[in-house]
Amino acid sequence: ATLGKILSAPEDEAHKIARHLADYILVWAGGGGDDLAKSPHMARIAGSVYGAVQPQKFYMDAQGNPSEMMKESILWRMHGHKYDPRVEPLEKFAEAYTTTNRMVRIYKVLGVSKKSKDWRAEHGPGYPPALEAVLALEAAPAMSELKRREAILAVTGTLRCGWYDWYHRR
Image (tube, rainbow, N blue to C red; front, side, top):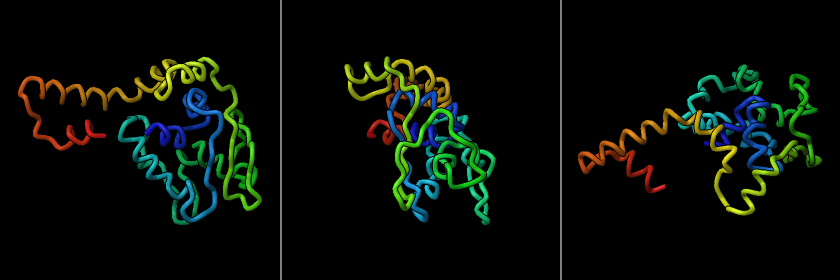
């Protein structure tokens, strides 16, 4: 869900998250089954956790024109960077490598958080504290639903809900 949030977000918002997680972003831009073709699914997954992501506004029409949300997304911009005149130049990501056939594109995340990198080196997998605050605000509706279901379970001893079992098995 976090990756979908990053890729479907405008550059500034995507950078606020990506700078705490990665040095580089790889985009598969080969056409057909590339990341742009999969992006509506990424937006739906992100929207299931982060209420600000509205997947119904993230699409391309039958003529290949992006919706406003897709046009502003970092994925659209990385996919078409330097090759599509409709794409604005990037400011917080720099092209590091593009294959000769443009199927794979790699972008350096500028201004990577050293503090978050150090935290990850020390603690291993997980979100660094600086990122938890950014993501917690967005995920509040999903988290409150989980808390509600946990309260029901504590009182009744059962939920009789497949959602709860699925959530805790993953």
